[in-house]
Image (cartoon, rainbow, N blue to C red; front, top):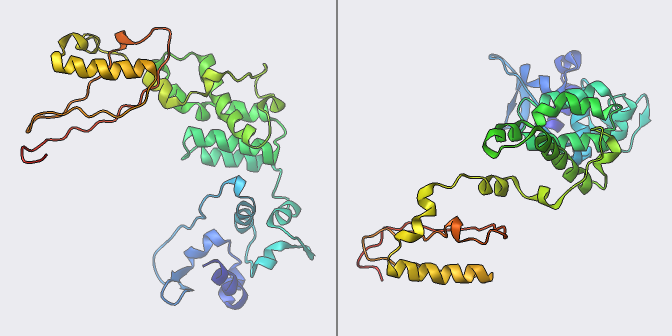
Length: 292
């Protein structure tokens, strides 16, 4: 589609006159997948757009940037030439055209992404922009889009009893994780008036933090007292192995036609001085009598 777009700009008289951006081309032309070419649109209105590209994809990102700003290109070489000077990369071409290191473009990128990107993606994008685009005022940019980047933690605030300081730390942690992967440190950008320090406990995943803070019903705490002799025997075996830190797989058999239920270790049986992350996988199967 893109190379045919170039070809139309070079050979079609109307396309030459219109000098369209790639995203605007579908308003006037229709892509025919059978013959793999553009034909003139006769009816209907279409709004075109280019798929988003992450800044870390380098040349693909800069090619998209050029296609969104250069009208009527006839080839890739056309995009690479600026005032008669041939650029070896799309990035250099974009730079010579004044499309890079523009504060308005950085702000526009964050503004657009904040309308449909998840907060975790926004934090990664923000860190990427800090590293590659080097905005002149990182603290101000952070202040403007902080609430968008903190939205997921804000929704969990009441459930997990998180303070404003903890939410801020979580947002900074997400940004710093991306910056560390790029060989940078968040403190280089002075986003906040204090030095950010990473603690091991902050590296726990959000899912684990959420699970550890789920309220435990009273009936679950008393469940162990309701086990029969056979259930208690199975419980003791599994619990003993768990306390020793031994891995293993266990199958609790049930009579035909009955649901097979999982045995859950009550929180009261846990060592209060130890933290646990337990994955329990089970399946409730309606067993038939003729299956052995």
